[in-house]
Structure formats: C-alpha cells, structure tokens
Image 1 (cartoon, rainbow, N blue to C red):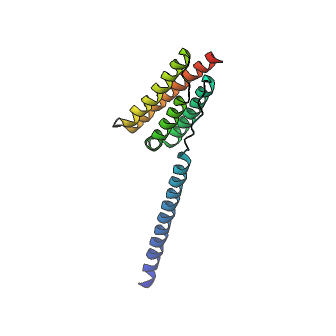
Image 2 (tube, helix red, strand yellow):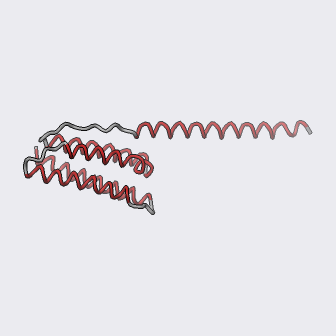
Image 3 (cartoon, helix red, strand yellow):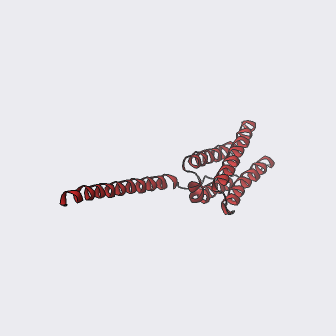
Amino acid sequence: MGSSIAPKILLAIIIICLIIFFFWRWSNKKKQQKAERTEAITVPEKTNDIVAIIEASIQTMQSYKNNLNKYGYVYFQETTPFVVQQLKAEADSLLVAERENQKILIQLQNNYKKLENFYQSEATDPKKTELEVLNHVNKTMITWRNLLKENR
C-alpha cells in the first residue's frame, strides 16, 4: 500500500511545481511588458518647425501602433492616457503664428481628441475597439506623412 501512494504524491508534487513555475514565468512576462509600456512623456520646446512636430507625432503614433499590435487591448487601456498627453505636448509645442500652422494644430488636436474619445467610451467589444483605434492611427499617420511631404 505504501508503494502505490508514493507515485501519486510524486506526480502531485511535480504538477504543483509546474503550475508554480508557469505562474512565475507568466507574472515576470507581465511585469516586463508593463515596464516596456510605461514611457516617459517628453515635452518638446516651443517651435515654429512644422516638420519637426509632424515627425515627432508620427514617431509617437508609430510606437503606439506597434505596441498596440503587440500587446492588444490591455496596452490600449493602460497607455492611451500617456500617449494622449504626449500628443498634447507635441501639439502645444507648435507656435501658431501662421495660417498653415493653425491647420496643422487643428489636425493634431483632432487626433488626440479622437483617441480620448476611444478611451473614454465604454468598449463592449475590445477587439473591435482595438481595430478602430488601429484604423484611426493608420489614417492619421498617412495624413501626417502627406502633410510632411507638402511641407518639405
């Protein structure tokens, strides 16, 4: 009777060890992902250089898009406020002296307002919201790249 219990106990211990190992690995991956997603907000200096502002915004949106594709809706929920703050800082750094700068500023503001609306709306289907945000980001980046070509 003693020999029939030992394999069961041994198997239970191995299963418990595997569960603990996989949980530990999963939690470490989550911590790593969270550390990668928290980005510092950099406030650009006031400038009249439209090209620099558009390039900075494209870079911010490209990073956001890549991470959204990589991490999904969870990334959207956790970091959209930071991305919006970054985009606001970039828009605020544009000096509005010329009519053309005002058009660019309006587009920059429309972008972060749209992201705020996505973030504040209640998502019934996270995957659909994620796709809508990605679609918005792609359209915005195309528009900004076209503006960049016009202003060079």
